[in-house]
Length: 425
Image (cartoon, rainbow, N blue to C red):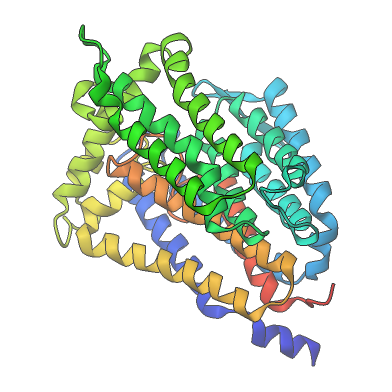
């Protein structure tokens, strides 16, 4: 009877939508690399097939384990992921200027990927037992430490994109853990100040003219808006002071970081995000070629294996970071919308499980897992279309890469497990 109950609760639409996306990814990886007759990219679609098969087996294994195991295992998984990050930092294999990889039994893995799982489990367990509140700042001490340790270790590699995933995962979990929408606005306001205060620096880079007061208007308007919200809502005095001070500090520190810490190539990468034509053969090259590929697909695309940008390898990293460009060129707007609908179905279907569950730990697992997947989808596609800087964040299910496929499979397995496990703990 118990086995029958578990079979009924297994969500086949959610599972098969993930499998369909993985199969789509295999075909895209093949089309992105079949032009190579020699070198490391020859036949890597076969490796992708093996990783996908392993991913499905991992999902089956995870859904067969009682959910309480992951609750008990949460902190151990977190500390194990930290250990792997430390090993990667001191004994990692260099790849593209970053110490991100370690060899285990002859297999190269990326510890920062599995750190996402470790942090997810640890935060889910902590927030399932404790609530967080801006009025009680001490409630953020332990979760802040949990986030800071992997964040700093990954940032040291350096891998800013993956480090950002930790924060993107934590914020929705904090919201589910007790924060309000207003609290979330106060938390992210310093980040917005950081971005808006950097606009004058970016616009004036390479010019003899100094930026004037007019170019500080965006940040000034935002800061006044935040002050107005603080005045109307009248939160705790400590919150008012903290929000004002952090916004002022972040808006000031932008100038210091830009002038003293960022190298010229890093500045050009940021500038190329706003205007790729500023460095068309350097940091803006990827974005320009990506937009050309996507745009040339028009409505129905050029056809499978017929993309000229893909065939001529004009797209760097077209089997990983820019796999969405391959999709757009070969299958056009229709193909892109179809894949986006699959992504949307997967996320909505996953969030729908929450209303069926009473267990706070499971709900937090779902929120955190879907936040990781959703953040990757948004950032990668926005990066491909030139709407965000190139960060090297892969596209779930479609991009080539063993460690990332296994990470996504664990997330999918955890989400499916919440439907099938006993909630009474």
